[in-house]
Image (cartoon, rainbow, N blue to C red):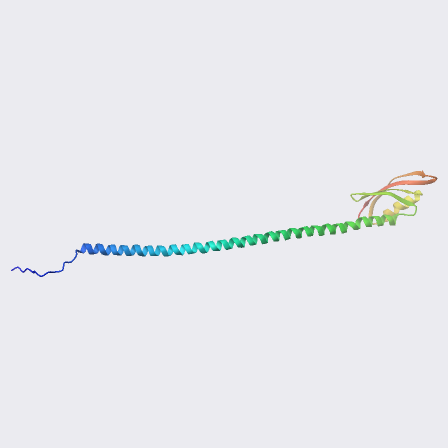
Amino acid sequence: MIKINLLPTKKKAPKKVIDLQQQLLLGMLVIILSLIIMWYFWNKQKNLIASLEKDKIASEGRIKEQDNMLKEVKNVEEERKKVYEKIEVIERLKKNQAGPVRLLDEVSRALPQGVNIGSLSENNNNISIDGTAFTNDDIVRFVDNLKASRFFADVTLLETSQGSQGSTTIYRYRLQFAYKGL
């Protein structure tokens, strides 16, 4: 015999619809989770960029300060170099100052009584003297005294001539020598 159940029964939804809903729910969860993760990394990157920009601005400020300090150092170095150059010039002048003084001192020591110097000129440590004397012997003594000096070399009497100045007989001379300048 056939039994028929007339009692109302619950109908089950078709399994395909439930699977579709579960997949849709799972897809939505994955999308929401992906959006949250993307927002988190985007926010992290935004904060990192802001931090790096602050560091960049601070670094640029330090670079400007260091550039200013470098300019100051260069200015100080230039001033220092100028001072050293001035000191070097002063030292050179002090050193060279002794040369002409020594030259004139040695010439005056070698100068005998009766001999006058009219002009003294120097060119590359070569000294030329023009002058007058009362006798030829005085000129010879002057030349010998110059030759005896350790500061002079190659003493050469270039010319002597006799002349008169008023009623007095005088001798004009020209001589040349090298100054060693020890």
